[in-house]
Amino acid sequence: MTGDRTIRVLVADDQELVRRGFCALIAAEDGLEIVGEASTGAGAVDQAFATRPDVILMDIRMPELDGIAATERITTDERLDGTRVLILTTFDLDQYVYDALRSGASGFLLKDTAPQQLLDAIRVVAAGDALIAPGITRRLISEFAARPNATSDTSVLAQLTRRERDVLAEVGRGRNNAEIAERLLISPLTAKTHVSRIMTKLAARDRAQLVVIAYETGLVTPGDTPSE
Picture 1 (cartoon, helix red, strand yellow):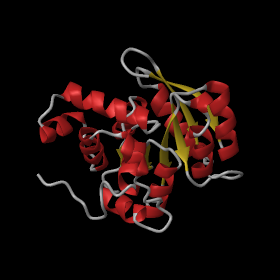
Picture 2 (picture 1 turned 180 degrees about the horizontal axis):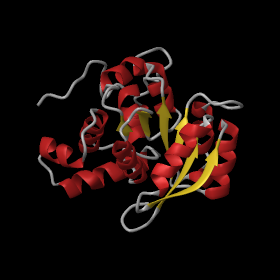
Picture 3 (picture 1 turned 90 degrees about the vertical axis):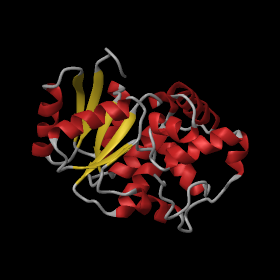
């Protein structure tokens, strides 16, 4: 999904003008191609299986099946293991952010995001990184992770070495590999290797899932902001 390979994109939105606008923008960009469209959540699931896209732009409020439920169906099916979901919505309600990440989404952006930022976001998500709109802070995600529906199950951390826990905490704080390397005094390649191993051990699809795990296990706590 990265490098010279063309990124295949599916657009799911119940508003035809919005959907067609996204499709036109993406189709005109080198390295990206549209492989399908859907106007309902159920249609998005069907199209995902039919086209096996690299990235799905998913609206939240759609008929038949909302975007959160559709995302969960897609991300929990091993046949679509290579597909990433980028949530797009006009609603920046905090609960949507957390629900989207818990359902397996790799990113969350508002529809008023600048065109170039959207194109960049598709590439970021396709590469396996997490992406959250700048206006939606990690503080709010941690707030929801601290609520009763959070598991607070720390047993999964037993699979990790002490260094891997340190790396997971930094991922949870939103740091990229280069920043993690600087914080922990290791090389960027070592940081990348640790992240890959953690994802394998915790059966996480991508870094977005690691962020959720870091909060839900209490490794990163509500109000925990990185010191500079």
